[in-house]
Image 1: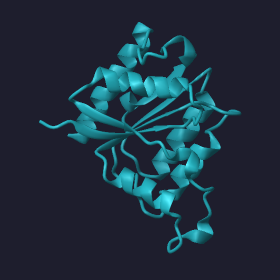
Image 2 (image 1 turned 180 degrees about the vertical axis):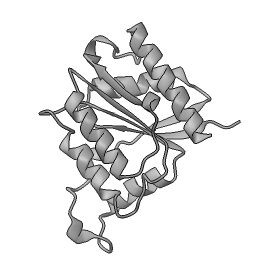
Image 3 (image 1 turned 120 degrees about the vertical axis):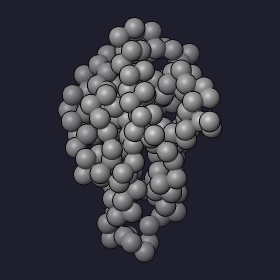
Length: 176
């Protein structure tokens, strides 16, 4: 059986992000089972502008939409900024609305921050509108992430590790 193609979207564009470290940890946990590819273009996407729909969507946004449509599943891991989603992540998701790119797509939604409760509620709300497929097990809120994952891509907190493993297993069931 070939690995499932999973697109990982990090809501932080920081070079050294705990959310990127978490996505790396997930990649290391499932070699040969999932082929996790980190989307690297989030910071190059233009601000969402509905006046450009449907005929003048920028090439970077079209590429993002295509990547979502052609993958088996998506894992989003984001911090919370100012009690909400990072603007760059929200803009990216807004570009996908008209194309219904998330519709019917299995998604694991992770908010990993100091607290994250407001951003997590926002992320889940946006994904619901986008018609992403999720279960309670694929919706992870991980507070104090910097104390639970290291730069080597290892989840150091046993409870968080179990939560992530349960979430990935649930995502794999959604793909099947």
